[in-house]
Length: 256
Ligand SMILES: C[S@@+](CC[C@H](N)C(=O)[O-])C[C@H]1O[C@@H](n2cnc3c(N)ncnc32)[C@H](O)[C@@H]1O
View 1 (cartoon, rainbow, N blue to C red):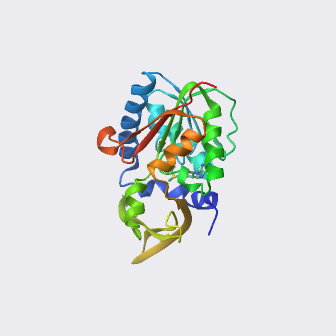
View 2: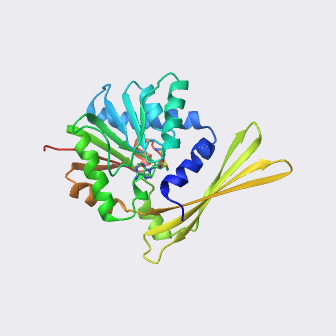
View 3: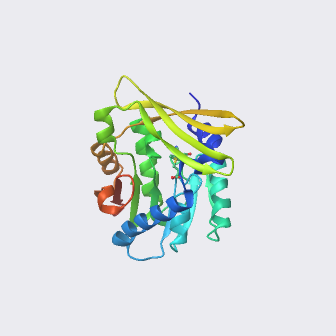
């Protein structure tokens, strides 16, 4: 099993191919997330940390919506690409390579901390989860907002699927197919993931396989972890209500 950092470093150049149209996905996601943020914090602009920014899928859209964004990510390759992609779209923002369990930012500086698209479930222990959430709380200003999005693991844990369906992206070289195989641990909560990308190669295909692991946290487990870390006012928005493709948790930093 490669480390999470190795997984995303290796994927960084190809990450946008997970989406049929990355720019369209960024625009759609930003619209939905910005509406959640405005409803909780007002119009802003807000000082935002995306602490698992990856190549910038949410951060670029939030910067485009006018917020002052900083991105950080465990993967130096992904963080560097987020900086370059944001600059190319004229919404450039600074990024850093940083583990969300040890955020290198001052205390109480952000209005909003984002950790979206199933990034938190890469942490596989309760200790790591608590460390990361406490760190996110530390960098939020008083009454600042935490916004997490994760897969719908309540449904997924009940069904224990063995795979995730293919996505197809059309490129200048032809169509790239991405899909995942999931291998559940005996605890029924964690799984190893094999991430396949089939890339056209002459008359055949080049197969790129990368491996990582997740902890399939239910809404209840994540709510408890967020409360344990000191947050208040925890709530969930479902995809059908907020237009984001995953369930979204919001919580307030609360008073010190
Ligand atoms: C599924 S990707 C989502 C990235 C980005 N939010 C997006 O949607 O494009 C998960 C991200 O979480 C990051 N990540 C995983 N563990 C991390 C950690 N301990 N600290 C910071 N980032 C982490 C990975 O490097 C990866 O970029």
